Length: 357
Image 1 (spheres, helix red, strand yellow):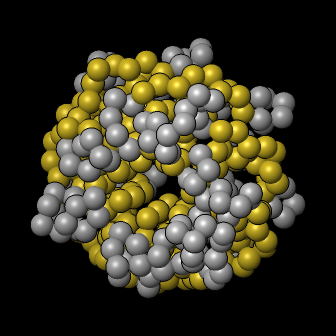
Image 2 (image 1 turned 120 degrees about the horizontal axis):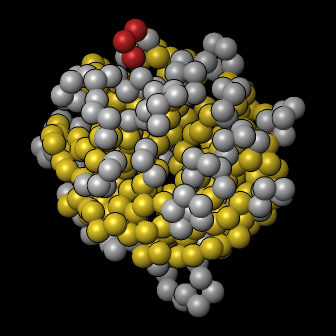
Image 3 (image 1 turned 90 degrees about the vertical axis):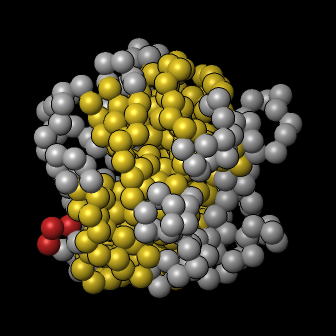
């Protein structure tokens, strides 16, 4: 890819109609932190979650609507303009999460109202080939308003490509599936969380054996250990995302791990903050270090981007706010740089090539 040394390109998904600019292209200067919008495309409804190929030549977008789709875009290596390659039905409603497996061979998608999880093979030039696997959840939880049905909110691959973990907000379970060589899913079991937790997103530690999940309904983060034999997640402990003196309404949003593997960051929608945790290197347990305001409302997405920055997408205040990560402590420093755009809900940044800082 042809890029300037001090610039990182990234893509922003939004809640939007097909007639609006749905996916924005932006640039960040890693020396100054300066942010700027440089383009965008229409023609996709509610591109609420994005995924990038490892070589940053293809962008995948979940179209979160009644009859869900995944749209695939070729990226111009010089201008970063997006060109539609194809679109595939997910066979379910409101796909809200997409992720490529680390080997780049499959794309995973979860459908929040459809209750189904998809596996697509990745074909030539990054276009999606046939759907190789699909599972559908059944049942309900104990919250009549939010858990009347299954609601798979994310589908995340293990770092070794062997398993897929589905956080189902409606069932209070994180399901473990074995990803077969032919792209099908075989259920291995499920990790049950406390009632009305509402598991939402899951992220793996760089060591591949620890994972951390944010729970939307009870505003907690769960630390997990991954059993190396069968891939099952075993609960290490739970910790609140909120300070003890907060009494308002809140839902958990997103979760990220610092590149160094020492810190976890999670977003609060209501308290409108990021909580910063330290990871105990022996046990994997989390302890809160600080809460920082996101200078906006409803921080749906948190992205750690090259250069030592975090970008927070504030859905209901129409802004993306930037923090610098202090290298030694992991503390977050508000830089004053931000973008203004309608209903941002996801940032996906290009990553440097291996060996390039």
